[in-house]
Length: 125
Image 1 (cartoon, rainbow, N blue to C red):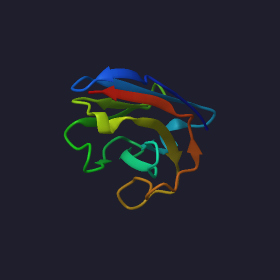
Image 2 (image 1 turned 30 degrees about the vertical axis):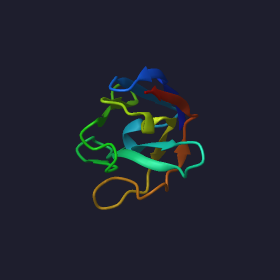
Image 3 (image 1 turned 45 degrees about the horizontal axis):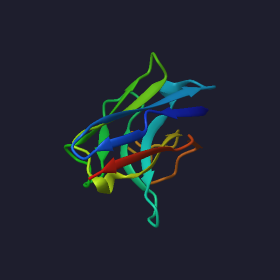
Image 4 (image 1 turned 120 degrees about the vertical axis):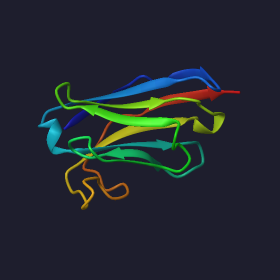
């Protein structure tokens, strides 16, 4: 699976951005998807994850209520809608695809099979 991420950029605190991750190469609906981020000097963290059908989602505590993950299997795309952005959301954001899911239908931790290139999100104060 090839993953192409787009939608990063510079935004003021309180603003919104939507990231997209377009998949190609294999059947998109066979994969659970996730969004990760890595800030300078920090470890990569999972921001959100979604099951194959989109029926189950999970979020990091730091983004709950502000970020929303969704997918459109007809368009082979997963999205991350980011609202009420804070300077601490500044990071490189990555999407990932995985086939080894748990009983909830999402991939555990960072055990994904395929990774997209990152896109930089910068939130100014």
